Amino acid sequence: MLYKKGGRHIGPAGNSYTYIGVDNEESLKELLANGWFATLEEAVATSKPAPVKVEPEATVEVRQYKDLSDDEKKEIGRRILNGDKHGDIGKEYNVHHFTVGKVKRELD
Image (cartoon, rainbow, N blue to C red; front, side):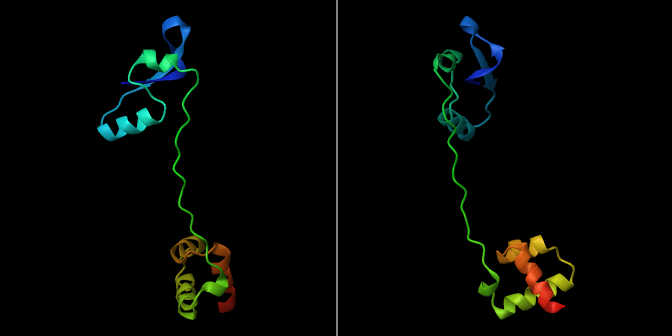
């Protein structure tokens, strides 16, 4: 069991808290690093909740129409004609769905 200050439960001296069960060592380490405590006394003794560590998401620059090779444009066109969704095609080729639409307009 791990504890955190603030929540629907009322503990010693009227302090509110919440608790969570932990079933593996990896989760235990992560939760302890993110403001959870092994004892209720430690949790309610904190002056404010600890900040949650958030890992930044990797960003990938979306390619533009001019970045597509002729072969990629042909393959995108084939997929459009097969009825694949623009969003799915865009994810696979790392382009915006509007770019897929531009390839479609060239087919018309």
